[in-house]
Length: 134
Image (cartoon, rainbow, N blue to C red):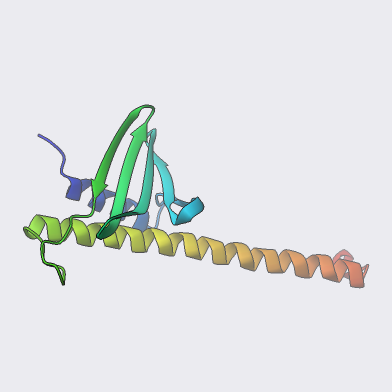
């Protein structure tokens, strides 16, 4: 039995959102995201071609590469898809992208908070030599 694209996208979304040991994504150059799971490199990015822009999720291990692309809508205007599975896959990829983006943004904010506390500690040490010796 083949594993569906929707099942994989939903699995990665759940793994990213789990509170205990979530799948950790990193921001790459160009605005894409990457992660590793079970020896497979994941990459989530916007794919742009003539007349279409959508999300793409790639999986690679060595020379092996596979892709899941956001289904293209069949209507010129709007978001009508060929079937319900395409609509669910598009929604799952968008939810995954939002979750990954939020995870990376929260980590970036925590890094800024830590940076400020380190800066404050060093400033205090410079200005008040005995500040850390109490």
